[in-house]
Length: 209
Figure 1 (cartoon, rainbow, N blue to C red):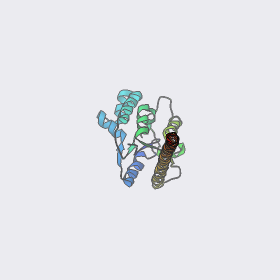
Figure 2 (figure 1 turned 60 degrees about the horizontal axis):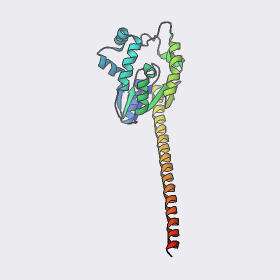
Figure 3 (figure 1 turned 135 degrees about the vertical axis):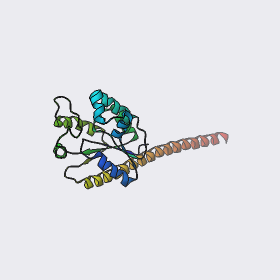
Figure 4 (figure 1 turned 180 degrees about the horizontal axis):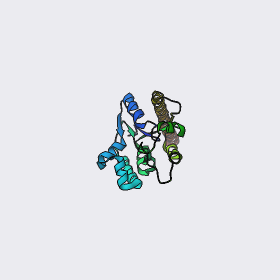
């Protein structure tokens, strides 16, 4: 079931925008995990956060993402999903994680007011602090990284498609190599065993004569 694509990255990198087009181009389904959270809780994200706080929201986010069972889907979770250990472990098991990377300068050009965009910052935390905090998590979980700096949305989509195709080719090659290696080892073992039996048979024949 590792045929899903999971997009991670900062707000404004286009996880949903790019994800929808990639899903269409590859004949896959598209799932917005934030919408699943709203559907479960019957509230908007900002209402959930206002009610249970950031830590409470992360628990819900972790649960919803970790329990998502799907195949042949492009999944766009919220940017904070990288704090959710169970969810990220699950995503690593069911798919390939694509990190849409953009510099802080690129993101700032796209987001003039993080709060209006729904970005939750802790007391005393700046948007730059949040960016610096999240980047190591994105890099840790990514199977594929696609940089958006200097790219139009159309360029990013093509770059993602090319990167995914190349990643899948490499994965197939590795599996084939592993299979051949294991199969070859079994053959050598079998041949060795057959050779021993032949020698035993020769010795037995000498004794018989």
